Image (tube, rainbow, N blue to C red; front, side, top):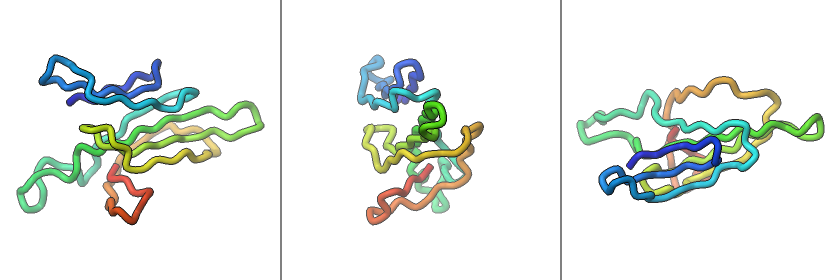
Length: 123
């Protein structure tokens, strides 16, 4: 599965590359976003786990959308969604106000995703 981002359409589309590009799932992003980005990876997402039995949930991804504030009436917003890249299932999401623009996104480490932590994300 390949996960594609269309900034013009404000949409994420997942294609099954083994089945000639059939759309597996899609997700709408904030319609007024100035930009959208996908974040995947980090220092603890690897192909080899500590015990040699695979990666650390490398199918989880983070979508970020930045929405400019309209004049001085409202602040800018960042909408984030943590989701499964293979199924499109959203684990958690939120829209938060920000006081300055976002200029760089760096995945440093993964967090722990537990059922009781509704806002956790491994990206």
